[in-house]
Length: 596
Image 1 (cartoon, one colour):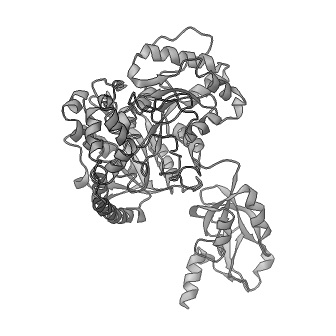
Image 2: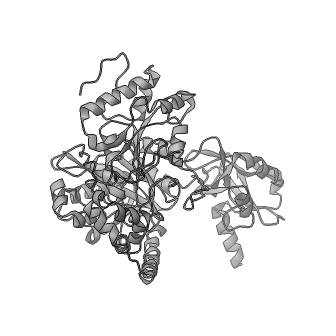
Image 3: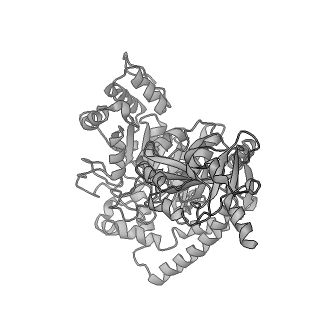
C-alpha cells in the first residue's frame, strides 16, 4: 500500500508499539505518523470501521497532551480507537444506535482518561453490534466492518470496529467491551491478542451498559506485551464505580511447569470444522512442548454456565440498560437486537433467583478445576461463519460463537485470546483462549507470552516504583499470627515459592509468637518455602521498624534467580534454635509440632 512521501520513517502494515517507538526515536513527529494513518485509513476504505473518526483538528488537544513530557509516558504518543459505547469527551457514545445519547460526553470514561494521561492519543470511535448485543459484528446501521483477512467472513463482535482498526494497522491498540466474548471473538477472527480482565479491575463507569454486573472493558493489541502495557495503565480502582474492585494488580506468577486444563475430547465442539479441531490439538501439543502439563477436565459446568447468559435474568439486565430506547426509537433498532433484548421486558423474580442458585452450584463445580490447574485452554470460538450464513441464521450461529466465551463473567474468570493458526488454506485466523480465576491475570499474560514465544516483562501488570516485594517465611505467612500486620500495611499476596538452595532454616528459641530464622550459608543450603508479598513503598519503613532482633530485612534470592527483600536472621540469634531446614517450610514444622 503506498504511503505519502515523507522524510519520516514509515510504519509497517502490521505494526506494534515497538515499531511506533522506533519511529518516534528516529525523529518522526506524532502528527506525521498520525497523517500516515489518516492516509492508510483512506486507502483501506472501510468506513464501517468507524462511527466517528476524529479529524486532525479535533484530536489536536490529545496530541498536545501526549507531547508534553512524552519520553516519560508509558504509552507515549500511541494512537488508539475506542468502541462507541465508551465515553470520549466531545463525542457521542451511540452504541451503534444513531438516536442514542444525542449529547456529546462532557468527560471521558475513567479508562480513557488513564490512557490519555499515559500519553495515548484517541483517534476515533468504532463500530459495534448495536447495544453490544452479538458476537457477529454485523448488527449495526453503520454497516459491517470487513474481516481483515477475508471479507466474506464476519469480523466478530460486538467489538467489531475496534478489532478491525488494529488488524488493519490503523491504530496501535483499541478498547472494546466484553460481556459474553466481545473482546475475544473478534480477536480470534482478526489475528489479535484480546484481553478480558478480571471484572472490576478496569472501571466501566462511562460505558453504555449491556449487563452492568458482568460488563468489562477489553483491550485489543498485536502482541501480549502491548496488551499488558495498556492493561497496566488501564487498571485502577474507581470509587465512583460500584462494580470496581479494590485489588492491587499484584496477582500471581505461573510456575515454570504449570498444569493447564483442557476440555475432554467429548466436551469439545467444533460443529463439524475439522480444521479448527486440528488447530486446537496442535495448540494443546504446543503446551506440552513448552514443558506444561496438560490435563483433560469435565467441562460441563462451564458449558452449562454459558447457556445461562441468554436464558436467565441477565437478559432482563440488558433490557434495564436500554429497554426504554428500544421502545422509543423502534425505527433504528436492529431487528435481531430487538428480538433478543425484548425477551427481558417481563422478568420474574422467581426465575432470577432460580438462575442465581443454579449459577452458584455451577460455580462451585467449576472451582474444583482450579485446585490442580493454574489455567485452562479452550478454543476462542468453535468455527467462523460467512456473513451470508449469519444473515440466514442469525441467532443460532451467534450462540455457537459463544460456546467457549459466554461463561467467563458469570464464573468470574479473566481471559486472554491469542492467535493459534489459520483455517481455510491459511487465509483465515483462528485462536485459543487462556482463562483463570479472578485476579490471576498475570498468570494468563505469562502463559500467553510463552505460547506465542514472546518476551514479556514480568510481572506484566505490577506497578513500578510504588511497591516493594518482601519474602516472608514464618509468622507473617497467610493464616499465621502476624499476617494481619502485612494486611494492615496494604500488603498484597503475590505468590508462594522457595528460596535458592542456599539457606538454612531454624525454629528460634523463646520467641512469641513462635518465629523461624532464615540464614544464608555458603554450603549445605536448602530451598526454603516462602511467600512473596507486595508492600506499598510508603509503608515499607514501618514494616522494618517493627521487626525485633535477631531478625531483620535483607536480600533473599529466590529459586528462579530473582531477588527480593526478606526476613533474615543474625547468626547470634541461633543460640538454642532447632535446625529445621530438612522440613523445607514453616507450615510443615508447625504442623508436625502440633501433632507431638
